[in-house]
Image (cartoon, rainbow, N blue to C red):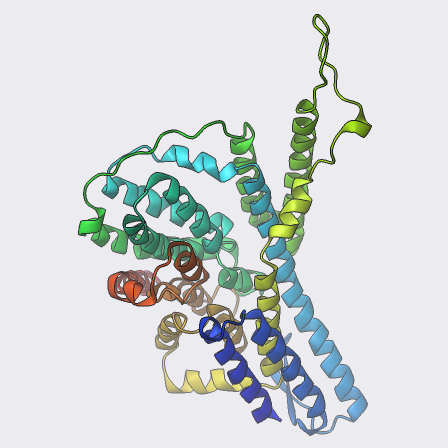
Length: 459
């Protein structure tokens, strides 16, 4: 039955990898392989001789356990993994909703005010730093969407934009690697108790900056980033609350790690608190703006009066609107992937594979290869699997290096990260164009940051 479950995982993973060729969203194979994997566990439950205890991180001998006890063990393990997975998903839903509320008030348009140049090289550095900083707060995927949207309002030439989009992918992935809320994989490690926010930032901030600076510096001497461009005319009227909601939303997301440190509660509780605060402000502002927009027609000399309540149109709640726009396919994809890896982990397959890897090569070499592999294979299951392979204490160097490698390695191919995939769709960037023009820059940046981290740790 173990072979059947592994076969299901491989088949499902091929479906995820070939998503664009098959024209089937990756959440479909993800959910199917989760269901079939756990069905396989249930069918073969009485034949398994070992079971992995995730809490103690050790294999249990269950050869003498009766069928009823085995059933209870499976249910407890399933509930344990579902609880841990749900913590991550609720956290992501909260963060996504806050971002959508900010966008409801056109908050990200305020970022355009930071760009006041017509030189391509200067714009390159501004965009690179914005991608690095924003991705650490609102995650690399959202940062990429925001910055490419802003670029469209600044650069009219699509041939110029694709080059900047390539740099955004590299810098956004680098920015997400050092922050506990900057990438799904770092969030998984943080919420899984493998790293703490302070140590993650302390050890990965500078390597991530190196990973961002080196390719950007090289790119600044390339022809596409030389010369000037024509600045567009200023936009018309913008939402008066745009800046307020931008800074409030970003500030409340940054507050989440602080909340965890102070109260020692799971991060998703802090994220729900932040969402509640942002939603409260959004609803209050929205109601006021709605009321002020409904002024009755009055006779000359009379003061304006509000229309009666029953004559007003129903105003749209920014919170409800945000909830309808969050990426639920991504949430379901993560659910399927994480629970499938949990099935493999429960049978001890992931742990045994990790032991074999540690006996055959050095941990650092394995993690470097894992980062390169994340350019081809989605980094979420890679990190989920690695969390079951190593029995290292919290804040051990292996977890930090995994966070860096999985977060930045995906930049080497445009399909290797969520940021790359969304940029590919928004700007119609071809796989081979990116491979020719950007992959080598991402590879140099990846090695430079990894080298700095290993040197930093050695000293």
